[in-house]
Each structure stands twice: as structure tokens, then as C-alpha cells.
Amino acid sequence: MLDFSQFSGLVLFMFIFTAGFWLLIFLLTFVVPYWIGGTIWEKWKLKQDAKKITEK
Image 1 (tube, rainbow, N blue to C red):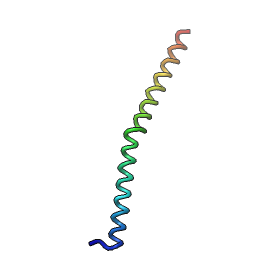
Image 2 (cartoon, one colour):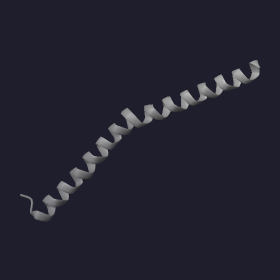
Image 3 (cartoon, helix red, strand yellow):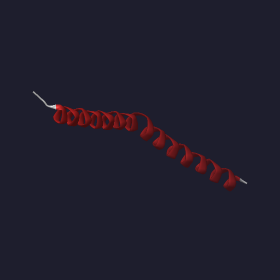
Image 4 (cartoon, rainbow, N blue to C red):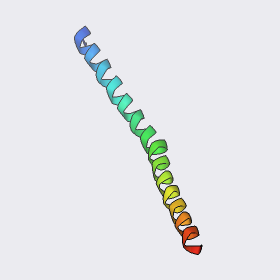
């Protein structure tokens, strides 16, 4: 059986582990695609602006 200090350490470890896991899932599913999509969008807009300038 676990005494109180071992149990509280296990609970703390599980909390940190699961918080890190969900943070990783959040970053991989929302933040990274948003970042990559924004970078592609900005490069496309810059190319469009450069194209308009050279056409004048």
C-alpha cells in the first residue's frame, strides 16, 4: 500500500504527465497547423503583391 507522501507524489506525477500530453496534442493539432498555414498565406500574399508591382 502507498502512504500519503507516495500517493501525493504519484498524483502529482500523473497530473504533470497528463497536462504535458494534452498540451502536446493541442500544439500538434491547432497551433502548428495555424502557424504553417499563416506562413504559407503570408508568402502567397507577398508574391501576389510583388506580381502586381511588376505588372505596373
